[in-house]
Length: 212
Image 1 (cartoon, one colour):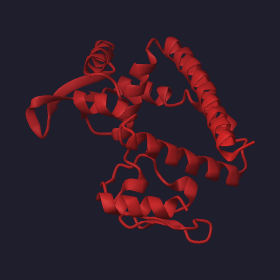
Image 2 (cartoon, helix red, strand yellow; image 1 turned 30 degrees about the horizontal axis):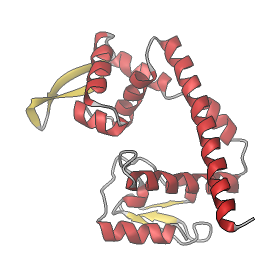
Image 3 (cartoon, rainbow, N blue to C red; image 1 turned 120 degrees about the horizontal axis):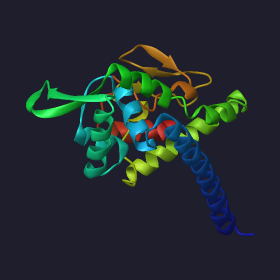
Image 4 (cartoon, helix red, strand yellow; image 1 turned 135 degrees about the horizontal axis):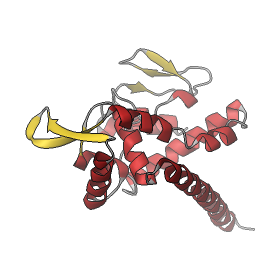
């Protein structure tokens, strides 16, 4: 069997496996959401607002969740009617509205963040080195999807100006110059509140080192 044919089959198997995971996640998300009286989209917005901590404009929410402006507006309006979020004037622009969680909304967001626990348990059965390899692969896949404009950019360490990658994290850990924090492969963050995007040249250099 030629290498090209084998590669195509491997790609197909990996893709099919990811689709099966997607099916399980969608099923679990709807099961949780129905019990909470929400939709998965509404739950996702609640979790996003909790993670960001600061109020977000509708456009920011739409961009981060890859939803249309109309879908985002409808979901936020429903959450507002349920008393889970509230709209206030943005601090940096009094003409714009920003969305933030209410006390009830924060409680619901914490519950919404727990629905993927079934997946965490499955990943937890993997050995430490398997988890590290899996996470590295996922980060590289996420990055490629960003490059292809299939998903919105994440505030990940690997594109941050403060991140100092290691060629071998087992021997020498990665490092965050801002937080003065050493990190193993599994501690590299997909979303960080102190993220500052690095310039294109630095990002390219970081990825070249990390991908080795």
